[in-house]
Length: 305
Image (tube, rainbow, N blue to C red; front, top):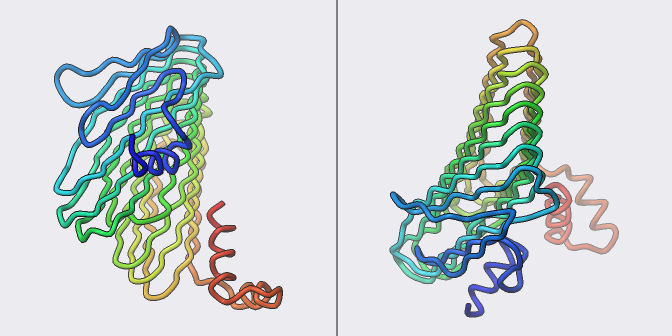
């Protein structure tokens, strides 16, 4: 790996080098490095680009890294990754993609990820998207995440996009069984002419299933963000969606909720708040010696943490 590869890998996956354990690292449409272990097997698909990640039952305190690097322009790929998490397993999966585009041609990575959690399984899924480069070509991501949780399974998703992405269209679908849980923490920062679309659809099928989705968004410049959520309660369940946004410059944020209580026992809640940074927050920080820009950056950093 060269310096650009290393910087991207550290930003999106927290790695300084090739990790230990199970991993699959992809660069510019080709395999860069892969390793399987006795607990977590990574198998390339035969019919299309992508891999199957098979986590055996009862595996705990293990992690798998599957980052993607793009360092060329005029390139687009779609990758299909399926995750099979055995009963009682408890693992961390670190994904995400980094693009560095210095060309005039567009660069785009679309990851189609499907997770199948058996009974009592738990997954912490960390997804980071980041883009850089001085080229005029676009830097785009259109990820799709499908989540299927059986009884008492838990899926925790931390999704972060904090800079440089020209456009993104994120779609997340989840179907939750009895006492299954979905917890999502999303953070998105856009600037300039960037566009970001996020759509969640969650079906709470099983009794006492639960979904808690929190999205924090900062839109700067003339960027536009759109957040949509569709909660469908089919049993005695609880679903909560919260979208909080900060607007700066001429930016725009649109939040569109949809709640469908199929069962009278379903409890579904949506909260949304969008506004600018309060002037008193900036004044207080500036009284401590910060410039207006430093104060603004401090407020945004705290909001997105």
